Image (tube, rainbow, N blue to C red):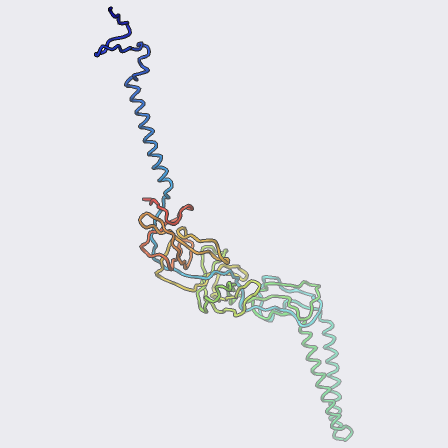
Length: 377
């Protein structure tokens, strides 16, 4: 019996029939070469993206830092304090008697000479007392003269004459006291200087033993600074004091410590330190100044910029322990250091690192001890 081959089949080499799909569905089994290349390209891109993403993730977690080495330079250790410019010679002018003020002859800011009249009190009662004392003195002198004339005749005794002499002496003392009281009605300047304050007006009643004017001499000035009690032990007589005033922002004035008060202010917990200013100083009485008192100088100190040093939380009002990051073989290590003098551009490092160490400048906030870092070129 003959076998008929259909049009969609063909014999294999071993005689079996292998069915062939219609030509319209051939591309579902055998992709064309172009699509295979596109598929391989997409797989390659995804593979590279995975490798790159892993590298980016690894590098992104590794901080990028700048390394510096400590430098050598001078370090000046100073104690900071605020101060005020004041006169060395100052006085309060007033009176020891009470009275109504009838005239004020000077204003604040006036320059006066020693003995110059500043104000006048009403002198009428004092003048009357002086006239009465003088009249009593004249009477006492007359009595004494009569007793001396009569003692030779035996009319007056020696004891009577002695009583007259004592009465005359008391009258003289009363005249002297009344004249002094009258003079107190003239308030005069006790020294050459400037009227810094006037606490009286015409018509006021001045109380006895009250200061009415403050007179400061401008010939000798000083700076009085209040030093914290924690720093006062470092201050020495003759130490240099650098002075800065807002009125002269580009200038620094230099003086030497001339006095250290041995009794502090219990309210502010400060001690007063004084430094005399030169005679030609530009500073004025009453100016507020910033002072730095030099307590130590080291010409060859180890220095770092301030942003390379971290400080822990403050303790007792002072900065906490200081640390830096030292990099060795690409690993950052947190190293405690002992800072010394501190300035706006450098911090002295007394202990903890050496001049050849590589230190991280401005370490990132997330930099931790033992972390691997990348170094900026």
